[in-house]
Image (cartoon, rainbow, N blue to C red):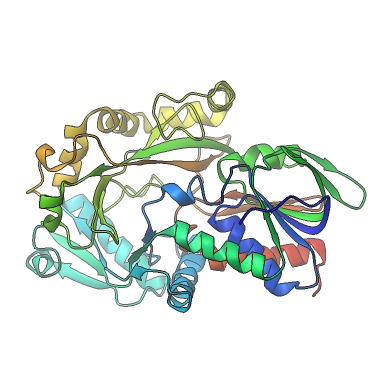
Length: 410
């Protein structure tokens, strides 16, 4: 799928994760006469967040009404189901329960119900305690929200399909081309990368965990900075997978952009327990032992890191415990499914992903998608979950911004 990077192009997209490929696909559809190139640092597309996601197609329940996440997630999920059906990409609308297991959570769950309705999430149902067992026989809670339209898919399959669409439209996806410098010129951007240079009239940066560095290299504000959070999962042993039919989530803490420890059934039958949410020493720290000096220095030198830690240190202590103790992680999941025990998970664990979370200088964890524009460049600054679900809608939004910023015409 990879091709050599061109010396010159009209439009460049930096980053071949699912968002970058969706943007490139949309650009190719809108501007068929423009030359288009995607520059990816790894040897194949969808290596990082796309390839290490939970695979959930979110319905749009959690997000503040009127926010980009709310609008783009709901629209994107609908479009993604249509796309998967058209391209014969395996997926399943397995449904999801969000459980309230105590009185404080019950109040927050009612707020979520209102958000879901305000966001036009379809088929959202309120279930009282006894009704929950009809959907998930082993789950226990005071009440739940049931979202039948939530589903699962392999987002790497989706990303590969996007890449094929780009190639079929005449675009180039060039791997092994990590961008190291951005030179803003009078009529172009010179992108220096591992295999040479590509001069582009305009560029859209969808660089995920490295988005802040490339934005700064192109002259943008260093605020916000990306701080990596590692999310680790355990896997249920095959004989205990029957405890989970679909997706089971807790009512999340509204002050944090994380959804809490949950249980996720995948297309192959695997059931994952997690994730944790621990700040780590590398932007690709899929292994906890991986530390990159540059990444660690950037995290520790950012004032927002210390302001966030002072605010959320109790949550940080809990996450550290779950990250270092299988029993603690399973115990969190057992609040949703009491029949679970530490003996029900495989001893070697499951898998891990790294969330590229934008953190403001004042210590705020950015909860919405964030974009910024520069000279001949547009930057996707914060696109964690549900970005994969919303990828087609994000692509449309980005291209509309690019049209206004660059004056692009078909």
